[in-house]
Length: 81
Image 1: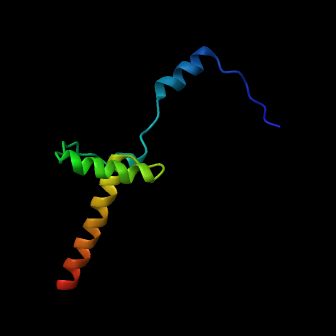
Image 2: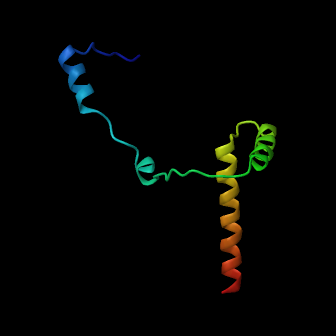
């Protein structure tokens, strides 16, 4: 059985003022915001593909596609060296 004591207002305020820390993982990852222009027809094609996959949105689909292409490019460069 867990027994807990009621915190005083002073203890609560001290706890709040202490604050928390940002996870190290989130600290490492910074994002670059960019604007991407593409033909409307291409965007519609992407949206049709995204609609078929539950849990995806357009941005996720584009990022995953870029990641796949980067891996392909990296593998190609490694083979030619």
